Image (cartoon, rainbow, N blue to C red; front, side, top):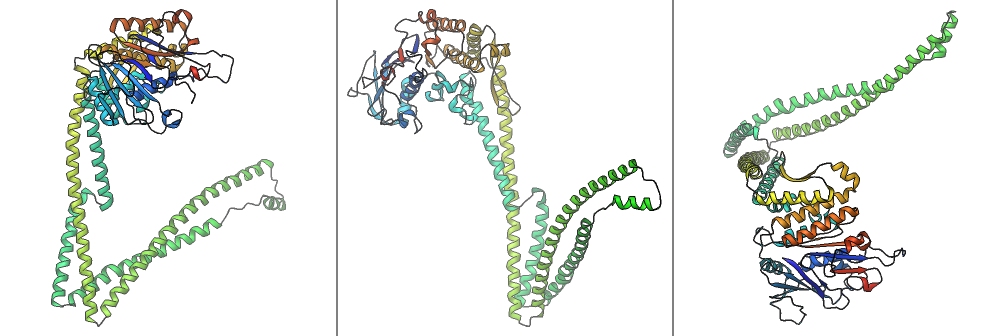
Length: 587
């Protein structure tokens, strides 16, 4: 598939007829000394966006056509493409109504209008993408529609930061582009998609397991303990039911007495003892922090003087150092005491809160035991019965949760086993598969880069410790190249070499036969520009591919510019005024 022509229903739009081989979009600077003019704002980069739009990119409110909607009012665009079947297909799309697309297939180059007899008229965007995918009839990467790959052959300025990960994928997940890239390089992308799906399933199941643990406060290791507690609670429940049924409150009251003495009273005694101990320790710490070490050097000297003892200067200095040392120790000591006071205070608050709760339980139990109202006692025991049933229900839910966690872990283990198999299959796919496409891409990739920079460049795929695939490039003497050319130019040429290599590697298949590189020559010195253009011209003839690039006229030496025919200079834009712009107006 190649680009044939782009035109509009307006006379101001600069119509473009694309050459079958190399094409140059030129930005011409006519007012070099007019600082209000910008040679990079002529519409060269806009053109790549227009082509993407005509190849049915979905646009949002950030798109230039939406931001300046009134300026583009009434404009209808037509893109004719040359299909691999030998037919021509014209796509009509209105800027005002971008979700209404029309198609017309012809056996020769044709200029159509809005009133032409369209094969498909005003079709919605989603079905139009499917229709265009069918028209293109690619016989490779059939698991992906053409929109997945188109941007690799419409490289804008934002797509040169990474060879493999385009600008539109920068904020996305690896699953959005890596399986496709794996396929594009001649491997099995389904394996990578499967691997990411397993990763996602394991992550989701693990999150679910953790949510169950947090919600029900369960630990799989306590399953026997929970079963034991359930058995005890059931026993207590049955005993309570029997006593209620027979109205025999004697055993219940004995149980309450035993609970009061064995549990509540003992706990109160323990917490009272702990409260006293903590209060004593807190008081001691507070008094201790109030004390400070005090040395009065003058008083000490007077004492020595009274007894006529000589007090040397050096000894005085030693005592001053001693005082400073003691002050430092006091600060550290006080810091520790403050931390200890805070900890004791917090613990004391908890102890007193617990004592309040225990005293309330004791009062409630005593009220029941001292009550002469049998009905009140009966009601209290019923409440106790309901409490036991609730506790048993909660414990049984914990048990079910543990079973559910065990089942989920079995599922995770099963998925993990499948994941390990898939990781090995990916590894085998990289190591052992006979991959002529990948070999051809590597060969051309190195050939392009070596021609421009005179060094070898390697493109390869590796698997990291997580079993995920990494796409990498390796360049000999990369530090020297980066010094000679700025880093952006260096990375840009790696991207260009990759796109051209893919185009050539798939030349015998029904696939793209064109590539558009915006600003590809910017930053290269003239010798490298010449080498690159000559190589591309050779590739276009040898492999029947279409190459489109943009450049400011002043960036092209005259000897390079003269190698392009009039037809190969498919579009010239300039800064003379609106007439020199792509749409015939500024925005």
